[in-house]
Structure formats: C-alpha cells, structure tokens
Image 1 (cartoon, helix red, strand yellow):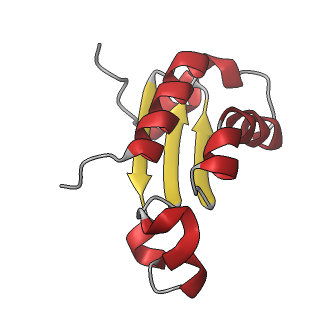
Image 2 (cartoon, helix red, strand yellow):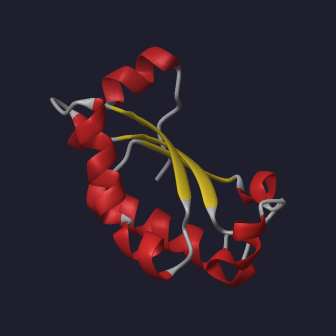
Image 3 (cartoon, one colour):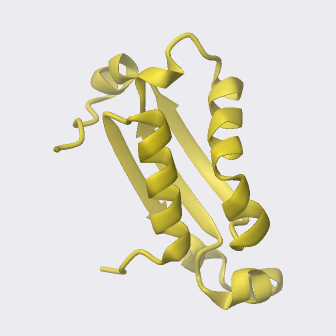
Length: 108
C-alpha cells in the first residue's frame, strides 16, 4: 500500500475541513499516467498528478453535478496551480445518494 504524499494529504485536509464528508476516498491514479512524457516533469515527478475522488457531503444538496465539480476544483486550486495536480476524476454525492449506492459512511 502506497503512503499518501503531500498533494493527497493536502487534498484530504481541504476536502474534509470544507465539505464535512460522510464518505471520502482519494485514490492516486498517477501510476496509470506515468508513461506520458508531460507527467514525468509535472509536479517534479512526485507521482501525484492524477487522482480519483469519491466523496459524499451534505454541502452538495441542491447543487448540480457541475456546481459540485466547480466547488471541489475551487477548493483544490492551490494543488492544481502549485503542487503538480493535473487531473481529477470526481464522483460527488449527497449522503442520501451515497446511501443508495451503498457507500459506507466515514468512521470518526
């Protein structure tokens, strides 16, 4: 199991503090893109360029999918601009939507 690096740690902190998720999973997918020449230089080659985020938050209630994505991208602006984050795959749900999909709530 790979230990989280500084980009993943920063993402988790910001998403948790701002969105108070009932479920959060951050998966580093960078190794799937390491063969891209641009990714070797991106972020100093730290292996933290591509992530999948699955997150359920009450903050998403009443928001469209686009509004949810914009909110997350805004929260992670620093990671994109200064820390080498290149791409996110996002699954953003309300707690009710997550329950219907069988996502288990975060444990305290």
